[in-house]
Length: 114
Length: 114
Image (cartoon, rainbow over all chains, first blue to last red; front, top):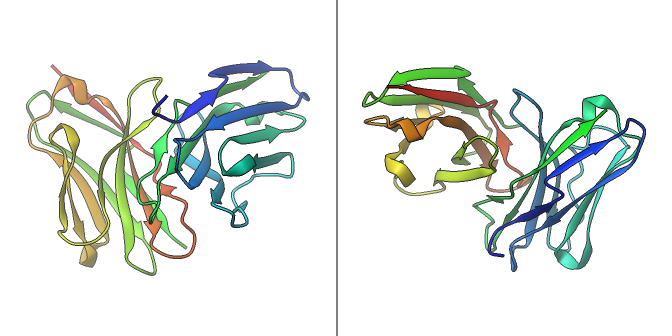
């Protein structure tokens, strides 16, 4: 497809379980971002990947959250031992070079922890 | 550190009336500025962006925004609201150098009354 693809679109999980959220960026885009959008809140930055550089992990809320980007393309956001406060929409975006001035967003994954 | 403030979490206008959504930023260096729109259950779509050059920027769907450095503002306007403009609007800032992730405001929900 032409856009950023995220899967699954919806995920319901039990408290304490681990979840993996996937993001397929637009081909050729070197930058990839993860954001979290909680109900009635703005977008909270989680992590940023740029090419082969070390990722900016400064937004990850706890050590239960981690992300990787394999081969400079697909990214996986992992949340371990999920808590109810992790319930949110997780948005992925990618940006093209040079300059990465515009971010293209996926539809998001709605995570519900019960 | 950069930050974004959107005045008014909810704005209601009549169809055909002027739309004005306010955004102020805080940044130690001139930033890149963006407005995104989010329709219900969808991802974010870029409306317009300011990087360099002309300070009045035109975007899609008849929206425009003006970068005013002296006021550290980037307000979004549209001369005549349409019912289809009802959505959530997010202002975002990104520094040209250093941290490249977007910092978002908390969003403004626009309602358009018939």
